[in-house]
Every structure is written in structure tokens, then in C-alpha cells.
Image (cartoon, rainbow, N blue to C red; front, side, top):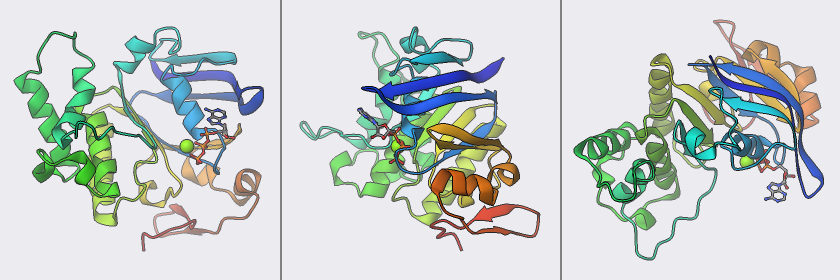
Length: 259
Ligand SMILES: Nc1ncnc2c1ncn2[C@@H]1O[C@H](COP(=O)(O)OP(=O)(O)OP(=O)(O)O)[C@@H](O)[C@H]1O
Ligand SMILES: [Mg+2]
């Protein structure tokens, strides 16, 4: 079964087009990067996959399910890391509360968290390198640390599909590398992963495909196929310099801080 099948998807906010005629599919276990300029519909696409938004035209299937029709069912298969999230600080939540949140909402309201829930949450926090912050107030963490806690929450639910909206925003390079290692490992275990990023370079060795979006789907395929100058001009209105390194990997150079 395909993890994701999208056909001729269109979506508008109050009559203004955000996504137009999007068709693509993702196999189970694939790791996909979504790139495109600000306002190109990347977050909107993730929200359609989550069932938060209903397609205006076209069909969307996630593991064979129509997300907007069976939003709860589809959400139970997905670990989601939002681009921005306001976490209420009154009462102040601890890091462990946030990481456990994803597992808690999957249980019936009266069933308490189990040892297994605790263990999975701790493992996830450890995986993002913040094991020592288990009992720290979330509001007292730095921005990048908060991002990593939200990633831990997404991983802790043991999802079949990970949807990550700019997971590396404000995250330092060592943490970023650690997280990429973790995503590689999950991908090898058969988890399907989709990450919206502005800089694809750090992920270039990990991903199977890139989806280049600018309301329309400009290109979808291997990094070599997608990162061609003509595609970059169509999406960004400018040529993005690209270097091809030893093993034939192409590296786009937008905002590259990766050496
Ligand atoms: N809730 C909303 N109501 C109205 N318009 C919206 C809403 N959310 C997004 N839009 C519009 O839809 C378009 C696509 O937005 P979206 O958030 O999907 O872009 P994005 O590719 O994720 O951008 P960024 O890189 O800045 O995160 C934008 O023009 C945006 O202004
Ligand atoms: Mg966005």
C-alpha cells in the first residue's frame, strides 16, 4: 500500500489559491523533503494530509484513508511536528508533559499513562539529546530546545508517518545532525517521513525524493532531477547555485551553513 496518494489536489483560503493540481505519491518507508518559497503551500499540504483541511478538489489518501473524513484515525498514524506552536505557560508545563502529550491524546480519557508510555517518551527525548530536561519547565528552554522537544513528542507516538514542518528551525548543527541520524534510523525501520525544510543540503544523503512546491507542484523526484536550475527559477524566481560533489550528489547552496 502507498503511504500517501494525492491526485489533483486544489485548496484555497477564502477563494485565494494555496495549492493547485497537486499529484504525487509516497511509498511506505520513503523519506521526502518538501521545499518551496514562503507562502508556497507547504504547511497547507501537511494540514491537508492531517485531515485538518478538506481538499477543495481532488483526492487525498493516507494509508488508504481519506484524512478529512477520518481525521482521528489518520492522526493516530501520524507524528506531527508543527511549524510554530503556542504552548500555554499557565500552568507551566514540564518537558515530560509535552513529550507525553502525543501519547496521552491517543488513550481513552480515563486510562492512565503506562510504564511503556513513560519509556517511549524518555527514549524520544533522549533521541533529540535532551534527556536531562525531562523535569524542566518547557517555557525555560531555548527556542531550539523547544523545537527538539516538539520533535520528541512527534516521535514518541511511534508513528507510521512523520510530518515535520521545518524541524531544523533554530536548531544548532550538532543537534540537527543527531536528529537526521534519528530520522535515517526510523526510515530504515519503515517509517515514512516528510520534512518541510528551507535548506535541503543537510538532508541530501538521507532523502529519497524532493517535492518542489510553489502552489503548483514544480517538480517531484530524486534530488538530481528536482534541483535543476530551470526548476529553481520556476519556484524561486532565481537561479540557486548548486554544486555537485564527489559522489555525484547535488548540493543547493541556499542559506547553507553546513560547511
Ligand atoms: N489560515 C489561513 N487563512 C488564510 N490564508 C492562509 C492561511 N494559512 C495560510 N494562508 C495563505 O496560504 C498560502 C500558503 O501558506 P502556507 O502556510 O501553506 O505556506 P508555506 O509554504 O508553509 O510558507 P512558509 O515557508 O512561510 O511556512 C499563503 O499565501 C498564506 O498567506
Ligand atoms: Mg509553512
